[in-house]
Length: 312
Image (tube, rainbow, N blue to C red; front, side):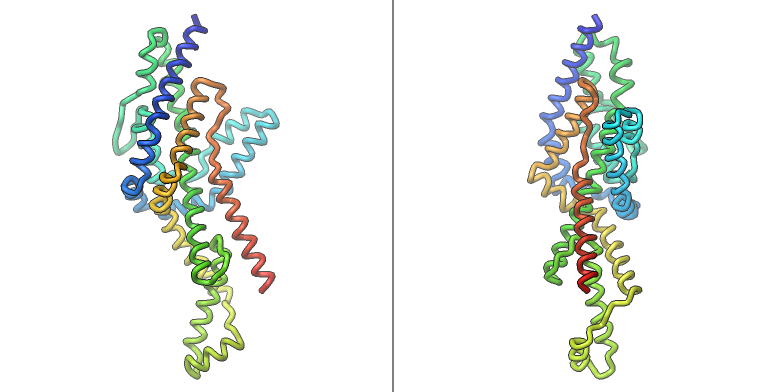
């Protein structure tokens, strides 16, 4: 009987997740298209502007912990790997929280409750109830386990928004460097020196006692060097501007990702991971690949900045 019940449980679960996949395309277009992302980013007004740059700083820690979990799996220490994967390093932003609510309520159709609202719809329990042999097992196998599994996977999924915001900011600095300086500037470290040099030049030109024309000639022969204080101020200013941009980067990134089908593929990966948790081995996790791409951009930024420092 237990074998038959488990088979019915798996069959009902697979049917539920198949119906979730059928909703992905419409869900992504409705919530991550231009209109949807504008509604979503209304929640960014407030503390998200502070949390966004902090999440950028915490992203390397997130990546290190995920790599540690992989190493723990390789060392056959599943307890350590599980503990590492269950750590939520990134700060929960209002946009991420609203994204999670939309996924749970509209896509997964599972119960949700927070300070702003509540939804009691439970499509998974309904799928289980459709199987007569499973009605007595819902509390033991469904209600007790699904909430924690979904929360863990959603934490990883929400973290991808921080990584995408970083990459969008990097694309912005690349464009600014190419247009303004005709230079490769994949981040703040590589953009700041060029911008500091311009600020130092303009300040020296304005302060030149013999006028702008002679000042231009003089500075052409003896360029003004940016002081460490000025360079630091420029870096701080770029970081502050970047923090505001990062909080709202999804307004630009979401429609593009929707158009390219990236959101759909990411949601399918999330559903695959949840289905494996419920009907499979539970070892197929949701991999936040965007974090690793963001770290590669960090390395490129540091490499370009270091190269220019030695050249200078």
